[in-house]
Image (cartoon, rainbow, N blue to C red; front, top):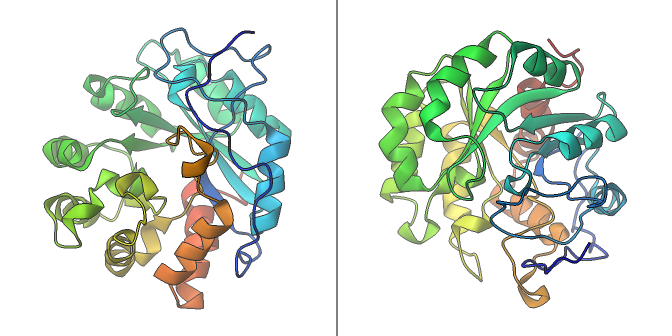
Length: 293
């Protein structure tokens, strides 16, 4: 397959973090791409990443000490969840869950099949597109509520703020991707963060503290944003690598996952709070230790 990649590959070897994650830690956000002869990408994909395979991911995860994982369906695959569900099957449902992308055409039988195979949520991506339109939020939320699923949202902070009334009325928990899409340059008192924190006053809303997409090098403005989220709802923060980091076009821009874990340890110096974010919160949110509903 002749493909022109628009993203740099993740580092072949991950540098160890200053301190490994505690036992039972979860990477709550990453993607698998390929092999492309088995899992071809959507013709309408917004970018073309190089392969990011399970063995490469596991090498990184072992270096960081991550033993649980949540595979997130990426926009390059549209609503074809085959690569994501294959990854969960290879990892094993005792260690892995999936966030899938479906639209309102998915049958009840298909949703149940995905749930039985380890899916626990459906993702709406209003940044990259090529997935489920936000017009289907209410209809899909009603359909997945009985499965015990949540809705995961990737959208910029201004879009999140505009949709907040609709989101608050949904009958399912919500998970906000990439630090809720805030613009870290606004600072910890910015409008985007304020809107996300208001939404999180509802005890069903979580946030993912994988936030480099909200910032620019040297990323120093991420720390006060992360600390505001943790202070507001320590029981509803989770963390993910966002491996293999498709935001970066060149190897010189690529971030190392050991450094990303170091950032979390800097943001959250208290050991008990880190354990919550890395172990306890994702175990409860994603149902580790439980059978799929």
